[in-house]
Amino acid sequence: METDRPAPAGPRSQLAAAVVATGIGVAGLIGSVRLGLGQLTAPGPGLWPFVISVVITVLSIVLAFTGRSALDTERFTRSSVQTALAVVTLVLLAIALPLIGFEIPALLLTFCWLRVLGKESWRSSIVISVLTVVAFYVVFVILLRIPLPRLI
Image (tube, rainbow, N blue to C red; front, side):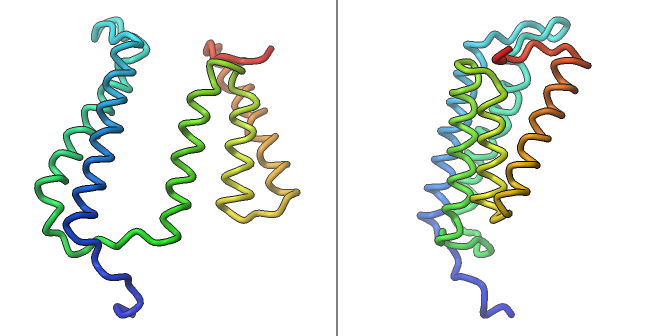
């Protein structure tokens, strides 16, 4: 079944992927610093996003130098659009969250992932989306009392 695999992506694709990932990492670094890092004994809201962004940035830079010779990578295909769509929906969630709370964006994100990306039925997409948001509300807002931006 090796013949079913797409051709290797090539050095330019590897470099492009590394540049995009580095840009995402740097944007995360800037955003997390703006949130405030705090201190190790009293972490701010941006500390963990900062740590994750550092890892993304460092690994992306490593990929830029070492990944260009990799032969086990695949070219971008039409199915790559699904991954891009998933990333776009997460960015939209991050933008909408502070504006309208987590309920509606989380509901739309879950529905989009189930119905559009997962090709689930309308009924199961709606039911699972609603139950997921209710479960998150109960766990994070009621039980853990995490101050999420919300409608109510």
